[in-house]
Image 1 (spheres, rainbow, N blue to C red):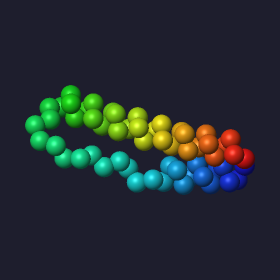
Image 2: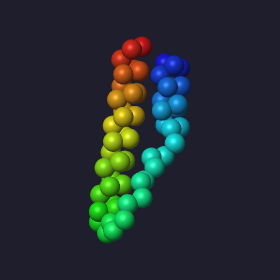
Image 3: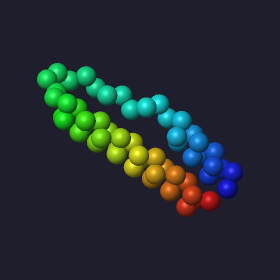
Image 4: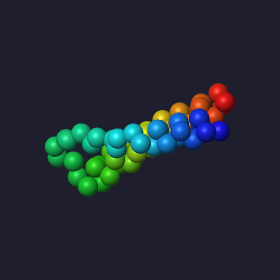
Length: 56
């Protein structure tokens, strides 16, 4: 249990995703790019935590 908690803390302490600079993006395109990146990072963290919990 403590190991799963530690792994969760380590997963959540990852640096925030970097937004790559691109020219000529309007506001809607920028928000879509940010949303897609957040979803990718969240799914990666959930997969990591789920795998860790299943291995206990």
